[in-house]
Image 1: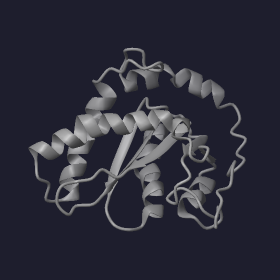
Image 2: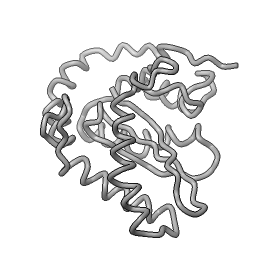
Image 3: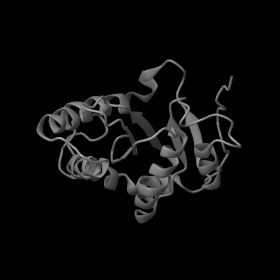
Image 4: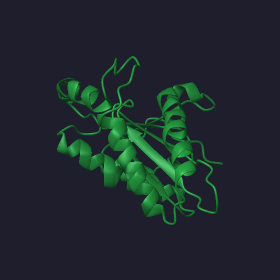
Length: 191
């Protein structure tokens, strides 16, 4: 299962952006920075440009995605870009319970990590002129995070996220005997 989350760190100056991250139980994180005012388009772009190609290279299909109930992830399933993208790729969409951040605790922890180890450090050292510069530094940090930084949590147990991911590949392939796509497992409430 892939979990998707977003973070809107406050930045010095006028650059406003959002980080969307996606990973397999925090065992490999992809991230992208977007600016602008179309949050519904960000999530499908991250999955399409960074997450799906990685999993395809590993020959492991994504069967399910877990998100919170933010507007960038859900609305009416037949017209929301993220829902349409997931349906097209036959990926089941599961949402966390409302007002329960611990349901997505792995990403809450990751937000704290990236804030303390990347954003606070980076914005003290460098003034970014473009989003592309910031994206390059984020990509470099994520490369280090995924391949060199060991984690002490219950899933990684002293390994890097990539080592943990590779150790679980055989199990992921065994579990993928039948996709059994059911679409949206819990429709979002639309007012």
